[in-house]
Image 1: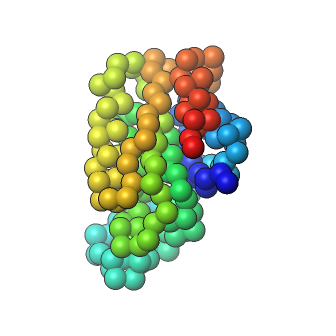
Image 2: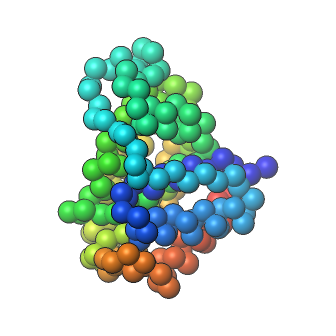
Image 3: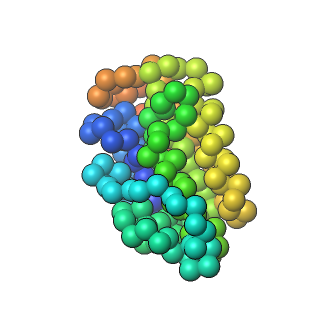
Amino acid sequence: MGKKILIVSTSLRKGSNSDALAEEFAKGAKQAGHEVEKVSLIGKNIQFCHGCLVCQETKRCVIHDDADKLVQEKMLYADVLVFATPIYYYEMCGQMKTLLDRANPLYSCDYAFREVYLIATAAEGSDEVWSRAASGLEGWIACFPKAHLSGVVFGGNVTGVNGIQGSLAMEKAFEMGKGIV
């Protein structure tokens, strides 16, 4: 029986390179027999966390927007979470960080996810570029003791829409998705 995989594409640019890698990851995971859903943050209303911590008691955010729905209806039940982000200033994009903050209700829930993956793209190509984003995601994952960072796919030296096409990163994303067991 396959796993339930949720891919969250956090770039707000249509045709983004990180979204293209997310699509390849999804193709590989589907080929391996998993149930895959990809959600884009384009057009979503996601407000900032208020830091009220009411969610720790109620297991639900007091802000009822698209982040609340994504967390309650999808992230909570996924066996595998995949976050795809462009790298801005050596870090995950702001909308990804905001979503992670808004996922605070999961902390006190019986969440299903055990594996978390990071897919990232950037104009620069060194490992230093994506490592800070991975570190930020690992900080979030550390709050969920049953989960761990299972892998990273990075596509560097890409800027324009579809710049990632034909790159080795596309192949790596497909193989990483296909490799989930």
